[in-house]
Structures are given as C-alpha cells and as structure tokens.
Image (cartoon, rainbow, N blue to C red; front, side, top):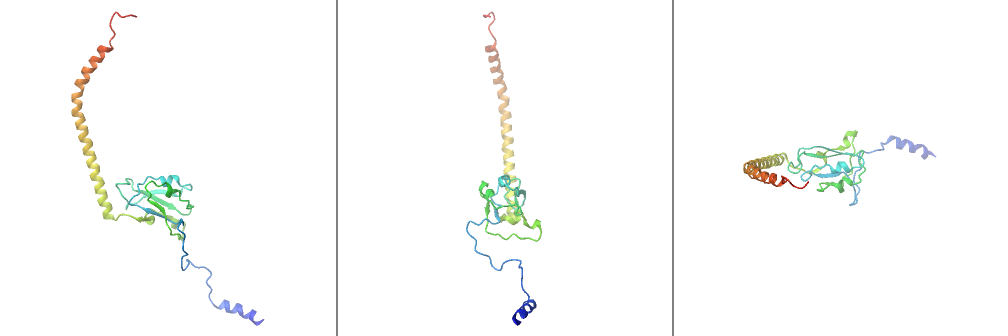
Length: 188
C-alpha cells in the first residue's frame, strides 16, 4: 500500500521525455520507398510535363540558375509542395529524360508551412557550378550566333538566287499565258 503512494512521487521527481523532435536512428527503408524527389538539373529540359501530370497540382516550374542552358533554355525546374504531394510517382514516370526520381529521404518536417515547399535548390542532387553555367551560357550564345550567321548567309544566297529566278519565271509566265489563252473562233 505504501508503494502506491511512493510511486507517483518518484515519477514526478524525475524528468520524463514525452516527445522528441526526431528519432535517434532511422529504420531501414524498402527499395520501393517513395521519399523526397531527387532532381538531376544537368539533364532537365524544363518541359514541365511533371507539373502537367501531377494530380494534386503540387509541382510548379520555377527559375533555377544552376541547370543546363543548352538543354533548358528557360532555366525552369520543378518546385514541389510536399504538403499537397501524395507521392504517387506520376511525375517520375512522365519525365521524358528521367531527371526526376523518387529518393529515400523521408524526413521533411518543418516549423512552418513554407518549410515543406522544396525548390530545385533543395531537390537538385546534381547541378552545375556557377563557372560551368557561365561556360555553358557562353557556348549557347556562340551556337546562337553561328545559327544567326548561317541564316543570314542562307538569306543572302536566296536573295542572289532570287535575282536570277524572276527572268526565268517571267518567261515561264508568258508561256503559261499563251497556253491558257483559248483559241479564237473555237466552239462555244
């Protein structure tokens, strides 16, 4: 009977942890676990098919500067709102270049709602450095300049060839008019 009175005093005097912020060790996850997405920004083309196929509309395409400007001209990459995501994997299946994958990281807790909206800076497991992006942008400008020069040269060649064509076209037009002109006095 005395034991019944002493037990509450013992438990009240020591500190008991009721909640913890995180577990001390993570359980082993299965291979098919669908956790936080992983983005390979080096191959993403910014097509937005992941955002279009998402049934909860939790993916939005946003600007990210460490991608590939040769492949992704708009530099648009996915930003995912994990408060709305149901981890169905449709975005991963729809990606034409397979740059979006389901990862094994499952802890996405935060103190505010905005903490669970993860942008490409968080999702990108592979990205270019600032120097590599600058080199790729210079390469993209060089390629654009070459295309513009080739287009200008083609237009110049077409203009030069166009000066010769009107004479031939004029002769052909006269022949067509003569053929198309009905003979006079024909049957009515």
